[in-house]
Image 1 (cartoon, rainbow, N blue to C red):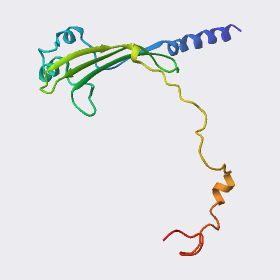
Image 2 (image 1 turned 90 degrees about the vertical axis):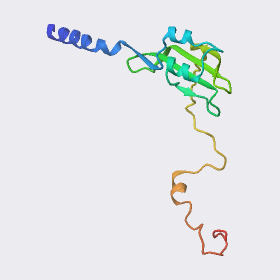
Image 3 (image 1 turned 120 degrees about the horizontal axis):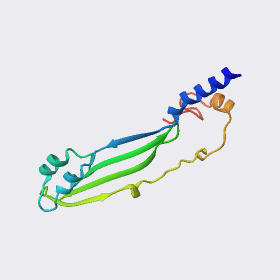
Image 4 (image 1 turned 90 degrees about the horizontal axis):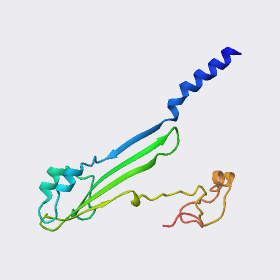
Length: 151
């Protein structure tokens, strides 16, 4: 009985690291002093790239806004990671490439999307496995015959 208790304690101690929270940082690592130095009307694309580096994302249709995205998450064991902090720095430029604004967003921009596990409804009739396998037998005819492919 004593060996069973000792084995149980050893297994429990060995499993404890699996329950620790794993912290993860993804994306741009924000340096507050460098971000504070980017000033509208003073800096341009070249000076922003020297100070902050290449952006995480540039505007899709036009290159007037650069985004620097950073996200911290925490995950316990096999559970889904949960965001703990997020920083989005949006640097906007005018047509000449000068900085017009520097905006910051945070964790309030995180949206939780829960997909539905149901099947997607389709139009038409329901078919079974046998009809799926053998449903086309007899539907094809020679070219020009009724039921044949259009010409």
